Image (cartoon, rainbow, N blue to C red; front, side, top):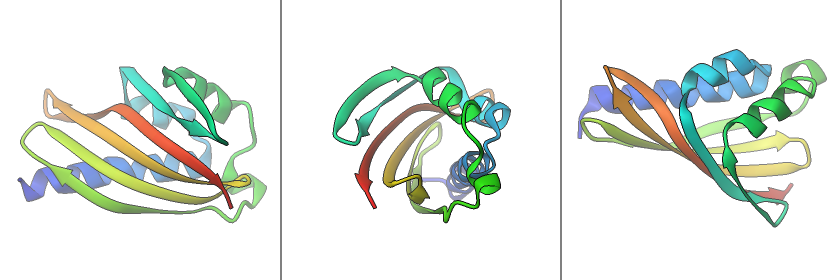
Length: 124
């Protein structure tokens, strides 16, 4: 387990939180690998897709920041080895939902990218 790699994975997770809050779709696109997948439960419904529907949803709605949403997010866990990493993020105030997100990352050419996101929502 490398502390430097853990710090790098944490930075990606924190950048994810910032981009989500600000509705910065281009920043989100830079964080995700082009082949990234997203699986999870939104309001009890199982969703399976690439990251594009998430980007489209973020682009099609006002940002959490501009809407004054009571968004609060935290990186709860980070773990990394030489080339793979995981971060767990909890989010509150994302509309009527609270989310638990598991981000899985891969280092390629010294750059960490999110390759998958699994998530679960619950009503706040």
